Image 1 (tube, one colour):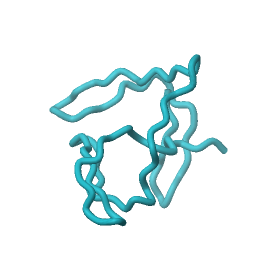
Image 2 (cartoon, one colour):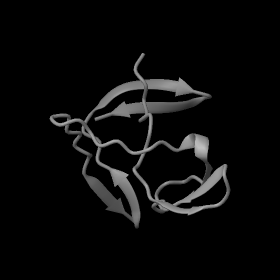
Image 3 (cartoon, helix red, strand yellow):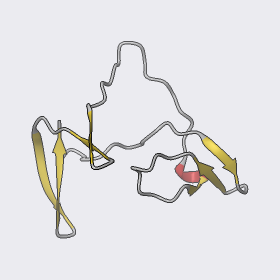
Length: 88
């Protein structure tokens, strides 16, 4: 079965190093996670290999929230009683 989410999101800038185990990130408002994370959750950004272009989907702004326009539903699964979708 294919995974429905990206392995990593970002890149995001490090705003401040809080301690040897925690850093503060500059995150957009649309990401609903805490802005202070453990360093084990952060990876160094590596640019894509030449010829490996990933085209991000077009953003649709509705009521000041960022949403993505869905072209096609590729897969559906139940996780803890909620439906999750793999979309294009």
